[in-house]
Length: 284
Image: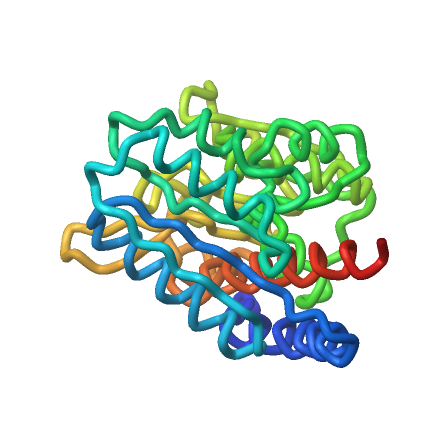
């Protein structure tokens, strides 16, 4: 068996086209969805991520504001900028690129963003809404994973889904979204005893542990759908995921590559959340 490759780049373009239609409908009514992205400092990876987010907004004709602040920006100044954007009617989504410098409390920063503009889905009110089944903004990476499964034609209802990783950004919300799709969900961590026992039982396996090629083909159930969220570097400096792709693709039914799998979907769902936020404003 050779797995079907879930092409995140192609699916991302398809999904973006769907949301562009919705953005165009809003613009026809005089409302242009707007996203503000704040970056503090000179982190190279963060700069790349922010540039890609701004580019995605441009592709869909959204209004975007890229706010670059120096590394020595005070916490108070950053919170003041967020408060300003919270009241700006042109802005429907606010994102602060993490990590922020150590002298700034990231939790305080994320909590300062209005829940109505929290397109990353990290505000406690939105986390609570997700856990109770009343989702407003889904965190973008798990949202993208769900969309990949949908577009690949992978059935979720009644299946056993195993999520390896428990972060607030991916693992926990991923498990919640799979539960809401009527999967039976198991959450594992890097400390799980006999991890392979759980991964081999998964119809849907989502990896978000941040360990290079930790999951090998003999740890995967034949025919399973494997979603690899990991973004690591191997011994040669090449980008790779948490899954040993070469051995896994000979066993799995579906698999996402790294790069080119989940990554393009994360930014796509950020744009989707921004458009959805603008639709809510239009509805009011």
